[in-house]
Image (tube, rainbow, N blue to C red; front, side, top):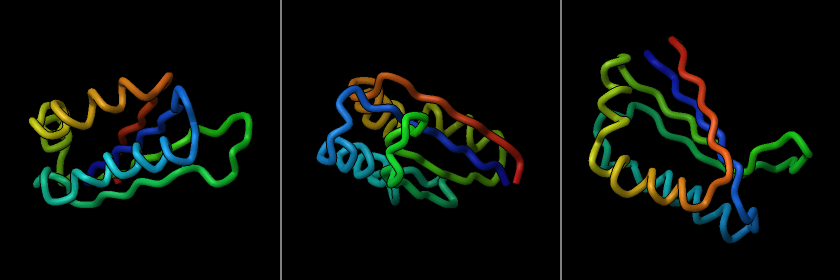
Length: 96
């Protein structure tokens, strides 16, 4: 199994924007069949080092993760929205 974790720092980290980003990430459920697990949430601590929203996904294989990156819903709907609303996006992918 491959775990894919992404952290998003929003350009304008208002509660409404954090909810919109979280909701857009969660909208992949049922639209991206490669996802074996999907979680997203807004940061609670709000410290200086915190990012605003986190995404945790799991895939059966590295090839499924790679296919997810170019999946029409992820690449066409989710990624453009994230890039338009975030000042920084970082990710870690590992075998779990």
